[in-house]
Every structure is written in structure tokens, then in C-alpha cells.
Image 1 (cartoon, rainbow, N blue to C red):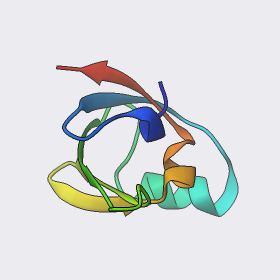
Image 2 (cartoon, helix red, strand yellow):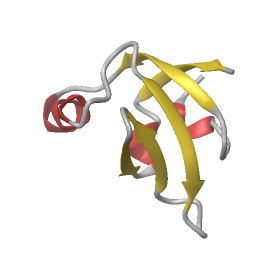
Image 3 (cartoon, rainbow, N blue to C red):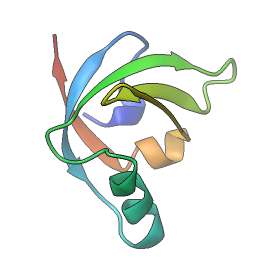
Length: 75
């Protein structure tokens, strides 16, 4: 499933980061690498951007950017 499809309060493990160039590099530099656990903290009132927690850091991503990340739901 795509990260952009997850709901508030759900957890997941990053499986794949698609894309290329600056966007992919920026996502990787933020610590969002394969195998990292993520938690969807909340969506903005208009559903863009979303705030997530990765490695105890709060990160905001646009939904368009989040759609480049494939995750596996975890409990």
C-alpha cells in the first residue's frame, strides 16, 4: 500500500521508495529508508500535507510525495 493511503494513527514499515533525483534523495536523507517504521500522526485540515514520525522525528510530507513510498502495515 502507498503511504498516502494510510490513515491517522496507523503504523507501517517502509518497503520501497520509488522515484528518482532530488525527491528520492531528500526522502532518504530524512531517514526514511527501507525497513524504517513510520507512524501517521495526523493530516492537515485539507488532507495535505501529512505529518509522520520516523525514528522519533516529526516529518511533514505532501500527499504527492507520500505516494512515492510503498509501506506494509504493522500493528
